[in-house]
Length: 441
Image 1 (cartoon, rainbow, N blue to C red):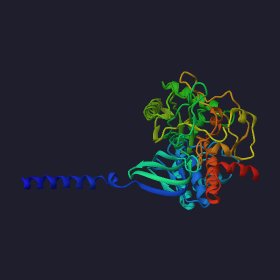
Image 2 (tube, rainbow, N blue to C red; image 1 turned 90 degrees about the vertical axis):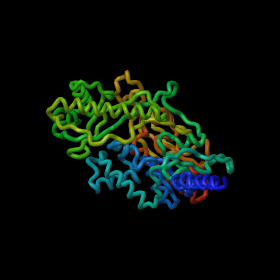
Image 3 (spheres, rainbow, N blue to C red; image 1 turned 30 degrees about the horizontal axis):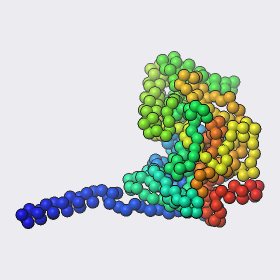
Image 4 (cartoon, helix red, strand yellow; image 1 turned 45 degrees about the vertical axis):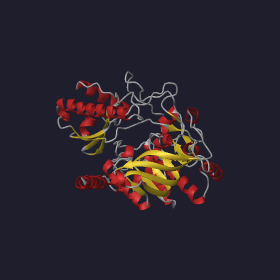
């Protein structure tokens, strides 16, 4: 009996040892990390925020869920920088570096692969602690010293981890950190809740710039960008394609590489993983079908092939986290200036159709004038030590439709990083920083 009992105990110990050794993530205690500033999300705004924070002397960590920095610039293959003119600082530096590395086809069109390397280098040079393949999953909010984020949690192959910082920056695009921290937010169009469609972009090869120009599928002298897009859509129709985006566009990244926007997915929420999945699968199916149908026409399309489709579907709308101030439609139509301005926006209001039954055109009845974004839009209202950067800052539906583009997101992110670092180093509460900036201006 005792012998049998010994065998059973030994077997149990061996089993426990196997489970212990084969599941190191589960047996490890929760890893803990600390920094002055932690930036969540490595897209255009997040990268700029992390670089500027580190350059100001704050210990800075950048957390990104994918294996590459850049977000819309890389993972989503946007390929073009909008509202970059007259921008200084990190936005200009990125463009200058791309030009020197032969990544720029034109002033605002770039090679996404070289963009990845450029952003890696800039973060490394600034001393940013980059963590890839890691997703923010929660926030611990404490009432000590007011309502503040004590730490955030993440999940990765390393398991569950805690990250402590004096200031956190939500650059997740969809405002995930703000939501986890219990911040109020707005979503979609006021009254309807409708959001702009998502788009799965791609790059193609097997065509030439000359053939696109000859058939008036590219803007040129005497032909506007819109006319070129309408011509391209007619070609799609000739191939038997009813394109979800009625203003499809192709533009050269290299002489033999073209960025293409020809897909829109309507009625899906960026806050729902099931809906994001459906939008992505439908988008990939559509763009491959379009390329196949065009290739069947022969002629200039006979060698057309997709080189790469975006690993992240392009999302135009997510949460807009409540800040100390909300930028309004009235602000952008009047061209309002602010004493605590951190970004001058010159881009138009770009609202893509909210329903598939509409034309699919990018339209808006609201017309903007050049306007300022105040620092107060970047400082969270509901917690004391969080800022926002990129498209999740505090603004209404139409304001967001203007400032959400890459050129402005980078500039917004740079400002958020600088302010966060200064607040940490000087020991100034975030909500006083806008007052200090206004007094300096």
